[in-house]
Image (cartoon, rainbow, N blue to C red; front, side, top):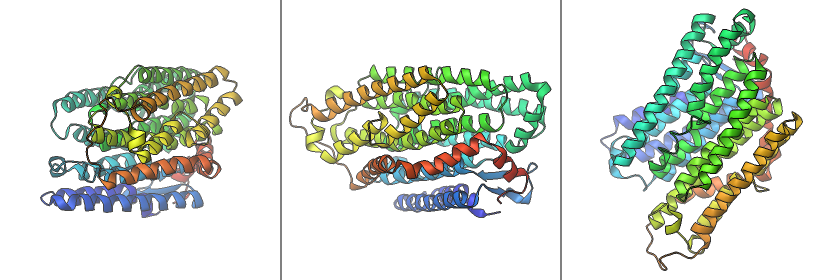
Length: 497
């Protein structure tokens, strides 16, 4: 047993409590948030190293053994996602300096970021299905307040759509948990894997329950046709909040799909696989077409969140170690690139006062560093070599070809070309063409905003140039997902503790 497994949950909670207790001291909020984010990243990195070196880590909360007590489990999938979440949390915190107004800070902005990070890390580490639901609700509450904080009418309208539709997903999720517990008599995911696998007579019942989870997690992940809430809400959030949401929230839904459909619901794989193939392809195509149809920079990026989710769920549909590891590689790449694109969009908005492409122009000449950061992140998202997106797409296309899903490989490549079209559109309109108003007066951008922008652009380059090194933990994660024995033994059979 190691407390290290619990630190990614404990540290954000402690930071949030400290921030709320000192809410009357606004000047302390940013330093507290920064210290908590740095501590979380350090703990997450240490957990990743421990999990990679020593195997799956398990902590039994309160000393109650599994499957009777609550457990936190860190396999390579969880450890990688917790580390990336911590990096995004730190970047969003730094980016918020001098960007977030005093009203939001006084309302607990930095504390809410850490409540959200606590929910995200808790979801990634949860070893039982009910606590996964609890962490989803923690995320939903924190994200709703972050979305509407500031009191502007568009934010409230978007926030109501966001919370109402996500609550529908929560109802479906909780219903599935109840049906699963009623049939299997346990909530521990490793124990569920054993019991559901032995219940051949109830295969149809569990298939129905699995479809309920598919809908609930599909709504959280914004897959086709359940994505409509995302472009209606994300574009209204402040830039650091939108970047945080874009990087993390839908990925928790994808993570949950990967977890339950490789650990618990492994029966009837042919039917589920075929359904996921169609859903993933439709998600890719519908998202990229929505992006192509818009002229607002933030809306284009919001639709591309949807499109890119399709690549990740396609890894689950292909269901090979290569595809599952590729889905994780794609997730990490996308979190880095997409988060940075929203950071860049926020800088553009502060400089020129608009997200509309028709109102922008001349940014490449006026701000070459901003143009370079956008170029790297945007063309990484489109899959241009040698950036991270090229290798992420290469792994997924290779997995599709190896499983003889040639049409799927074609869809991936075609969507990549349409993504490139959208990115070129932004590049041409916002950065290359002359400013439509000639000489413009620009808003101020604090130095803190440039740090995460440049850092994440460099990460996208590093992940492409050093793809083989980055692939190693993802490959191990794919193998662990494909063979669930190690996870079950670690939790129930005295594995790594």
